[in-house]
Length: 137
Image 1 (cartoon, rainbow, N blue to C red):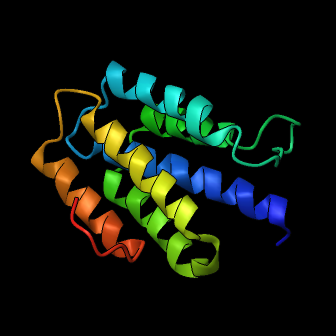
Image 2: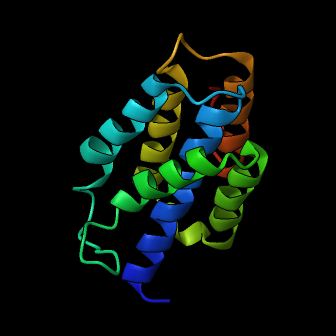
Protein backbone atom coordinates (compact mmCIF):
# COMPACT_ATOMS: atom_id res chain seq x y z
CA UNK A 1 0.00 0.00 0.00
CA UNK A 2 1.48 3.35 -0.98
CA UNK A 3 1.51 6.38 1.31
CA UNK A 4 -1.50 8.06 -0.31
CA UNK A 5 -3.55 4.84 -0.05
CA UNK A 6 -2.56 4.53 3.61
CA UNK A 7 -3.68 8.09 4.35
CA UNK A 8 -6.98 7.48 2.55
CA UNK A 9 -7.55 4.34 4.58
CA UNK A 10 -6.60 6.13 7.81
CA UNK A 11 -9.05 8.94 7.15
CA UNK A 12 -11.84 6.47 6.42
CA UNK A 13 -11.10 4.62 9.66
CA UNK A 14 -10.98 7.94 11.50
CA UNK A 15 -14.48 8.56 10.15
CA UNK A 16 -15.46 5.30 11.84
CA UNK A 17 -13.92 6.49 15.11
CA UNK A 18 -15.72 9.84 14.94
CA UNK A 19 -19.01 8.05 14.36
CA UNK A 20 -18.34 5.63 17.24
CA UNK A 21 -17.69 8.49 19.66
CA UNK A 22 -20.79 10.39 18.51
CA UNK A 23 -23.06 7.31 18.44
CA UNK A 24 -21.95 5.50 21.61
CA UNK A 25 -24.71 7.17 23.63
CA UNK A 26 -27.33 5.99 21.09
CA UNK A 27 -27.89 9.40 19.44
CA UNK A 28 -25.78 11.44 17.02
CA UNK A 29 -26.64 15.09 17.63
CA UNK A 30 -26.45 18.04 15.21
CA UNK A 31 -23.75 19.53 17.46
CA UNK A 32 -21.61 16.40 17.02
CA UNK A 33 -22.11 16.42 13.24
CA UNK A 34 -21.08 20.08 13.10
CA UNK A 35 -18.05 19.41 15.30
CA UNK A 36 -16.84 16.64 12.97
CA UNK A 37 -17.08 18.97 9.96
CA UNK A 38 -15.28 21.73 11.85
CA UNK A 39 -12.47 19.43 13.02
CA UNK A 40 -11.92 17.97 9.55
CA UNK A 41 -11.38 21.44 8.13
CA UNK A 42 -9.38 22.77 11.08
CA UNK A 43 -7.21 19.82 12.12
CA UNK A 44 -7.01 17.33 9.25
CA UNK A 45 -7.26 18.95 5.79
CA UNK A 46 -3.91 20.74 6.05
CA UNK A 47 -2.04 17.92 7.79
CA UNK A 48 -0.66 16.43 4.57
CA UNK A 49 -1.40 16.48 0.84
CA UNK A 50 -2.99 13.12 -0.04
CA UNK A 51 -5.93 13.14 -2.40
CA UNK A 52 -8.86 10.75 -2.60
CA UNK A 53 -9.65 8.91 -5.88
CA UNK A 54 -11.80 11.89 -6.95
CA UNK A 55 -9.05 14.49 -6.52
CA UNK A 56 -10.33 16.00 -3.27
CA UNK A 57 -8.28 16.28 -0.09
CA UNK A 58 -8.25 12.79 1.40
CA UNK A 59 -9.12 14.15 4.86
CA UNK A 60 -12.68 14.66 3.66
CA UNK A 61 -13.00 10.87 3.83
CA UNK A 62 -13.53 11.39 7.57
CA UNK A 63 -16.64 13.44 6.95
CA UNK A 64 -17.91 11.25 4.09
CA UNK A 65 -17.62 8.05 6.13
CA UNK A 66 -19.09 9.71 9.21
CA UNK A 67 -22.15 10.87 7.25
CA UNK A 68 -22.60 7.48 5.61
CA UNK A 69 -22.40 5.71 8.96
CA UNK A 70 -24.78 8.21 10.55
CA UNK A 71 -27.32 7.53 7.79
CA UNK A 72 -26.92 3.74 7.97
CA UNK A 73 -26.73 3.53 11.78
CA UNK A 74 -24.43 0.55 12.39
CA UNK A 75 -23.41 -0.27 15.93
CA UNK A 76 -20.80 2.08 17.33
CA UNK A 77 -18.83 -0.96 18.57
CA UNK A 78 -18.29 -2.17 14.99
CA UNK A 79 -17.07 1.27 13.93
CA UNK A 80 -14.75 1.52 16.93
CA UNK A 81 -13.30 -1.89 16.03
CA UNK A 82 -12.74 -0.72 12.43
CA UNK A 83 -10.52 2.06 13.74
CA UNK A 84 -8.89 -0.14 16.40
CA UNK A 85 -8.01 -2.85 13.88
CA UNK A 86 -6.39 -0.27 11.60
CA UNK A 87 -4.39 1.14 14.53
CA UNK A 88 -3.20 -2.33 15.58
CA UNK A 89 -2.27 -3.26 11.98
CA UNK A 90 -0.39 0.02 11.35
CA UNK A 91 1.38 0.99 14.59
CA UNK A 92 4.20 2.74 12.67
CA UNK A 93 1.61 5.15 11.23
CA UNK A 94 0.63 6.44 14.67
CA UNK A 95 3.50 8.77 15.41
CA UNK A 96 2.95 11.11 18.41
CA UNK A 97 1.46 13.99 16.38
CA UNK A 98 -1.12 11.65 14.79
CA UNK A 99 -2.02 10.12 18.16
CA UNK A 100 -2.42 13.59 19.63
CA UNK A 101 -4.74 14.74 16.83
CA UNK A 102 -6.82 11.57 17.01
CA UNK A 103 -7.30 11.95 20.77
CA UNK A 104 -8.06 15.67 20.43
CA UNK A 105 -10.62 14.99 17.71
CA UNK A 106 -12.35 12.23 19.68
CA UNK A 107 -12.34 14.32 22.85
CA UNK A 108 -13.88 17.35 21.13
CA UNK A 109 -16.62 15.28 19.51
CA UNK A 110 -17.44 13.72 22.89
CA UNK A 111 -17.66 17.17 24.47
CA UNK A 112 -19.67 18.74 21.62
CA UNK A 113 -23.09 18.05 23.12
CA UNK A 114 -23.66 18.59 26.86
CA UNK A 115 -20.18 17.49 27.87
CA UNK A 116 -18.84 13.95 28.04
CA UNK A 117 -21.11 11.21 29.33
CA UNK A 118 -20.18 7.81 30.74
CA UNK A 119 -20.41 6.02 27.37
CA UNK A 120 -18.13 8.57 25.73
CA UNK A 121 -15.63 8.51 28.60
CA UNK A 122 -15.49 4.72 28.39
CA UNK A 123 -14.81 4.83 24.66
CA UNK A 124 -12.16 7.55 25.11
CA UNK A 125 -10.45 5.33 27.69
CA UNK A 126 -10.48 2.42 25.22
CA UNK A 127 -9.04 4.69 22.54
CA UNK A 128 -6.14 5.63 24.83
CA UNK A 129 -5.45 1.90 25.27
CA UNK A 130 -5.62 1.20 21.52
CA UNK A 131 -3.15 4.02 20.85
CA UNK A 132 -0.90 3.01 23.78
CA UNK A 133 -1.32 6.34 25.54
CA UNK A 134 -0.71 5.98 29.25
CA UNK A 135 -2.32 9.12 30.69
CA UNK A 136 -5.96 9.29 31.74
CA UNK A 137 -8.87 10.74 29.77
